[in-house]
Length: 360
Image (tube, rainbow, N blue to C red):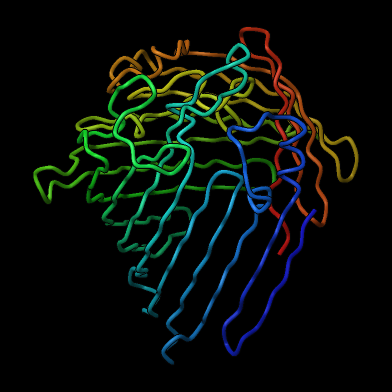
């Protein structure tokens, strides 16, 4: 439920999308993380401005703003045309603001939900993306960016410590700064009966200044889908680890939709390392409706105690967890709707609702 509008101003295109669906469903199923205040906070939406020929040489400018219930993201991207056989360059500037629920959120109701821990992440980054020419199955992206991360309270004040008095940054100051070199590679193969996909991300903190963070962080996602008659089996394995300097917000958060269902976001644990396995079988119920059964499990591999301040132990997170359940997938011209009913290891039930692939 929402409104969408496209406006052409000369060669530029402006897309506006305002959506009320997420708020209505969230208000029925989940308690508010904090007082929303203004009626505008009840609206989620996006604004996108695109110009295909900014200076007359096919330069492309994209400006987008996405607003959620408690988060926002502003992105500016500028691309210059280059021959297809060389890496495509893109200058990117981005600012995002979101609650740090995965690490600092407080589990409630037998870990089925996560409440606000009073910590919000404000991240500003500027840098360059290089997209390598893709082969038939492999694609690669390299980026180098300067990042400045600041932690805020729920009322917008800069903070250096969480509610228990532990530092929320690596430096101990109000912000962390770093230059990050990131390499992301993806392999994908598909046919009529199955598909395989593998993604690897490696981030390296470069010590341009002595006080800036030095670390190496990697994450991989391997997934396989197989058609079993009318049904479809999807399995995936996600893992990662980080060594070197580390702030709590860099920990791997385990739990929630897209991780281990049946738990709140980050309610299983948060650690320097993680391993999450997901298995799901979907089967058609009608032309537009599918049913599903799933099993998720995840662990921090005992690395929760290695996160500065050990927030997972202080919040009583188990460090590992299993969730299972069933759900519905509804496909319509408006978008794809997903409802999952999950049970965790503490026999606590959780209902998830999602909206994806909204038509433009």
